[in-house]
Amino acid sequence: MNESGTSHPREPHEYCEPREYRTEELAREAGIPVRTLRFYRERRLLPPPRREGRIAWYNEDHLARLRVIADLLERGHTLGGIAELLAAWESGQDVAELLGLRAAIAEPWSQETEVPLTREQLLANFPEEEAEAALTTSLELGYLRPQGEDAYVHVSRRLLDASAALVGEGLPLAAVLTTARGVRASADALADQFVDLIVDQLLSGLDDPLPPGEPTRLADALTRLRGVARTVVDVEFSLAMDRRVQREVKRISPRLAEGLGAGD
Image 1 (tube, rainbow, N blue to C red):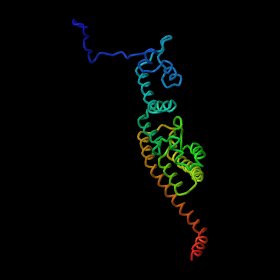
Image 2: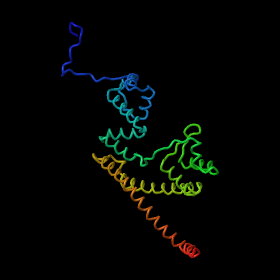
Image 3: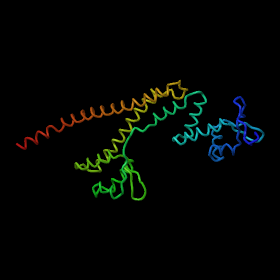
Image 4: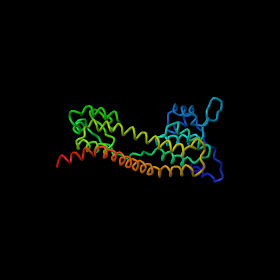
């Protein structure tokens, strides 16, 4: 210090000793309990500390690692996924690119608007004699989920409106929900086929370190393939409906002709 009691500024060439932390100090700096720090060590999310007798000493790299873990947890990553990312980081891969690829894989396909409903509102949408059974079936299908006492959330405004429109045309609600169960099974089968195609043909090399730029290329490809998959399903469904309807028209044509003849 100088005579005024203030410290002299540090010269640019002056060497700074790297800071080290005991276990409790590192946990405090990272904002986590000591037991969490020890748990991360047990899961090998942290490299071993330097040992000096019975004292474990951590450095700034350990603190940086803990802050990365906290950030990834806030983004919704599991500890298992974080361990994989940290291993990739240590092997020289670009973690930002890998995070972008993970985000592209996990991005939701559906963009539905949920609808909060009271039990009274929900039952008012159903014919009285079918209300309770329809409520049970809708819960089983996952269209509804409980939200507190006598309250629910429907997962899709569009599906809710479609069901109401079908019932409004005179179709029994029980038959509509039975058809919905079959459509759900068919949609699951379609999704399985597309996922298998993409995983087997596009993402088969994820077990190996990816070269620079490859995670970004895969993420961009996945984004483009979303539109392609929707197009394929839409076209195939439309063609299938054409084939099915034409068969049905041939089957009922004689009855239609008889009905027209009876009117003469």
